[in-house]
Amino acid sequence: MAHWLIKSEPVKWSWDQQVAAGAKGTHWDGVKNHTAKLNLMAMKQGEQVFFYHSNEGLEVVGIVEVIKEAYIWIPGEPWVLVDFKAVKPLPKPVTLAQVKAEPKLAKMSLVTSFRLSVQPVTDEEWALVCEMGGL
Image (cartoon, rainbow, N blue to C red):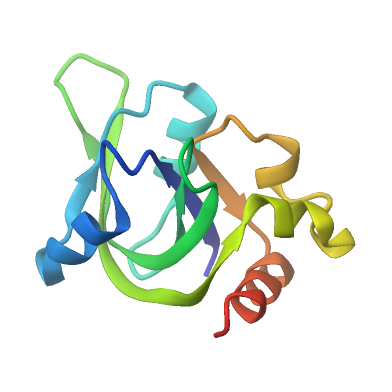
């Protein structure tokens, strides 16, 4: 199973809203970058994903799970949606500053491809961020 990170501006869609969506979850839309789209298309049902607050907070705040793999958003358009449900919050949100300060995370996409809204996360990065977040 792969791991991922998705970003959302809390004013547009926050962790609290994701949690409120409950077990039915919600689709992830608005991705208009081909690399991010390819990452969405690579996600498999059951994979776990960090939920990151961007622009405001700049921190990993929780974990969501893929509940529906990539599907067409608008017929005739190249963009896709993936559905997620909230799994659990991080007891201690992990900030971008903390990630950048950790030498073992220097190659993490969150550091090297900061603007990308859907990113892969290695098993080692996943384990370390979970540990930093109190899991």
